[in-house]
Length: 236
Image (cartoon, rainbow, N blue to C red):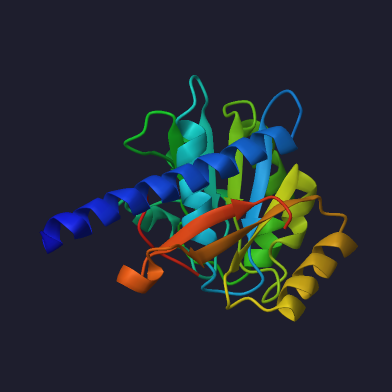
């Protein structure tokens, strides 16, 4: 009986999490009203706030729409993990392409979902900020936006390094990921101020690990999206 109850709670949690990411998807879709490719940066104030998990799950939710092609680019060249969510080998990636070591088609990896591709990080470079702010990065995005309906950039935390700043002009907006009872108001305000000073359009804030009613029973948490406002977890 206890096993069945645990399985039932687990299914209920998975449903809640899936619905939360679908709500995030809907909010994202209606936050960017434009034709052509929609390009979104996903970042956080500091590490371990669920940024990459959120980027991956939102990408999956977006790719579940009919006739929608989605690409997620691992721009966290200091602590890259996107490829691990999909069990894809990191052989050639973003850094290799930006360093003129290979062609663009060599760094696009296909996932089990036919509508979702990724560009992993490749070799970890000594100069990530310079690569992300290069003309090659701009030209790459211009090529990719002709191939995809959505491009998500998973970037390092904005309060830790400046890597996200050069990508602002390449995107349509930014989603900030925070962690319930972990991210502080000063940390969040610092991130928002930095982004605003660089003319970023903040689309919303996603708060991770908000306790559900099941928390007291089994320690469950809900990933919940809120429009007002490093890393691995289960992918739903």
